[in-house]
Length: 177
Image (cartoon, rainbow, N blue to C red; front, side, top):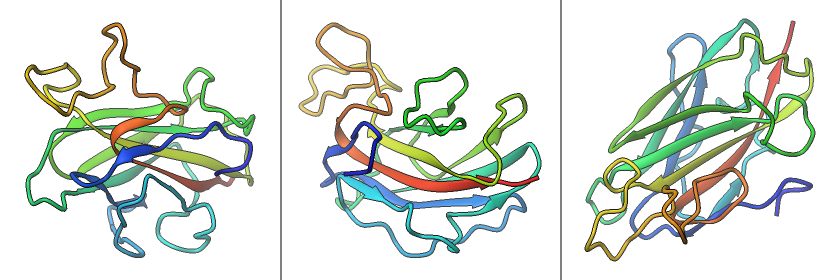
């Protein structure tokens, strides 16, 4: 699916999927193409589009936009990880760079101070969006139980597991001096 990285994907996109991931240092947002309802999108080949920037400085923003094909907006949990040391996982301290819950677009401010990313290297950034009723708590009765909980039998939203409703996308990001 995506090289040496552990796979992650959404199992159902009929209610929500990722419409747009846009990176900016200036506040100017642009989506190269509208999102599609797929379990996983490997966008690491989008070199030169607005989602793949060469970034200088210690901070940048990522605009995250959900799509709701049924017409109803749902509460979504968003997470972003960056493999700063290019060791083919997102498990090192500080590689989870954003976590938030919203029913609409979200702007994630990513601070890279102290992260020591490999410079001038394409590093993988993973974006995960999953249905999150009650801001990550299971709401009963609800047929769309989510995995954003630590209750026994359910998985925590992580960069290397499947999620029941939502989508996972990967991008390259490059830090330059």
